Structures are given as structure tokens and as C-alpha cells.
Amino acid sequence: MPDRRQPDSPTDDNPFAAPPEGRPDQPWQPRSGGDGGNGDGNGPGDSGGQRGPARWDPTDPIQRRARYALLAGMWGFFFGIFGIPSVGLLLGALALYWGISALRGKPAAATGEPGAPTGLDALGPAARPQRTAAVSGLVTASLAILLAMSSYALQLAYKDFYVCRDDALTKSAELQCNTLLPKNFVGEVLKVRQ
Image (tube, rainbow, N blue to C red; front, side, top):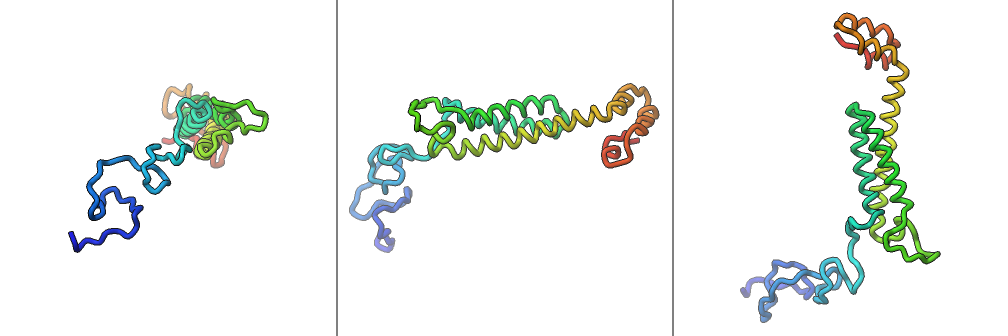
């Protein structure tokens, strides 16, 4: 097609572009990252024998614990919001343990050298997403534990109201329990509605 302009750069990365004039079609090959497409065969994300972008390695206990901390903390927070404080407290405690152990842990392939980095620093470029997951897990775990503890503290502080409400056999008896609550915001939130 003489009216079609070919790119000036020989390192065009468009996989859908037609080959330059006078060059035969070539079968598809995966790109190698960062080397301009010279076809050294290291595979995607590899350049010169070095590992490419960091990937999730399920066999590494530090990465597993960081992800577990994030998931357990998030679910513990949700259970705390939805009014199931016992599950929220359990998941929050687990997330706290996993987050701290992920931040302080040693990698699976530790070299044992005295000057070698430990914990998430030993993972190199893979440490950033794992550190973010572990810290996020610690934050959500703290929130889940705070929600659970505040729920238990509220039940302990207003135990008379909860016992009266649970023992009431009729709606009018349940409404009488509102007199045991204080006249503030907490009392307005907890009181039995008609």
C-alpha cells in the first residue's frame, strides 16, 4: 500500500502493525520487557536475566501473611460494623498477628548473612505492595478491634437496659426499659422504638 506511511522508528511496539516493506511476516512471539524487542527469549517482564515486576508468590510466608492480614482486617471491620463483634474481634486479632509477623518476618530463602536485609526489605521490589497490604491490614484490624471493644463496653455499661429488654415479654414492658438509658445521644440510639 503505497499511500500508507511506515513508522520512522524501528522499535515500534505496536503488535498489530504491518511489517515494514520488503520484510516477510513473522510468527507471533512474546515481547521481552525493556530491551526494545531484540528477542533474547527471557520472557515477559524479564530483562537481561533480572526478574521483572514483582509478582504474588503464594509460597512465600511473608507475602501470604500480608495478604491474610489485609483480608482478615477488612472482614473483621465489616463484622464489627454489622453488629457481630465476636467474629470482628477474632478476625481483628488474627489480622494484627499476621500484619506484624509479615512486617517483621524473615523471607523463605534467607541467606543468613549478618548484613542481609530482613523482613519485607529482603523482598526487594516486591516489598512495596506487600508492605502496603500488611499496614492496611494492621489499620483495619485496629478498627475492627476498636469496634468490637466499644460494643462490649457499651453492653457492659448499659447491662441493666439490655437485661430488661431481653427479659421483657410484651412491647409495653420493653418500652419501660427506655427509662434505664441516659438522656443523651447514646440513649437515643439504643432506646426501643415504638
